[in-house]
Image (tube, rainbow, N blue to C red; front, side):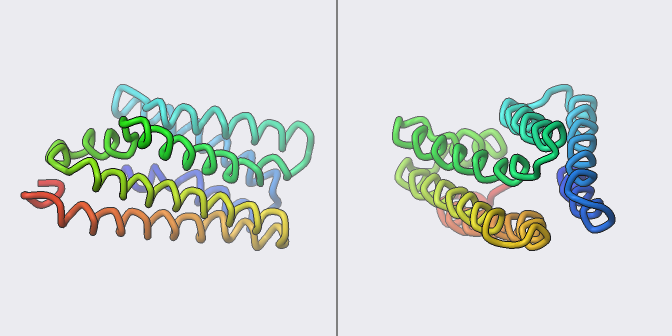
Length: 182
């Protein structure tokens, strides 16, 4: 059920854009994201800082889009958020406290056994992925028609994230004594 909850705002955004326009889609994204946040809090008892920061950024950029009736702000949101995330991952890794390692180890404690050099590679992979996603979003948002950007935002960014997850799983799988997730 959680994967459905994770993708609900994106599905609503895409569906409402197809039925109406960017402003209706942005409103739907904001409402669905708010409902998602409350549901996750109700279901798990907590909301991660990462999710909360993402939500606050969404509220700011969506709010500006709706109040100023200018889609530029919602188009900038993925570029800025993903770019900052790429930078954060790179900085925390270089400081010796890799964010990616902490997130993955929280998910599966068996990953504690992985060497720091491997985590550096994984951090670089994620940082590069987010940077390329930010760059791709910028290009599609400001050099292509809005409908093409919406398709890239929904399908392109999602696909790029899945490819990064699969590449990470392959790298980590070869580093563990026991299978990941067991």
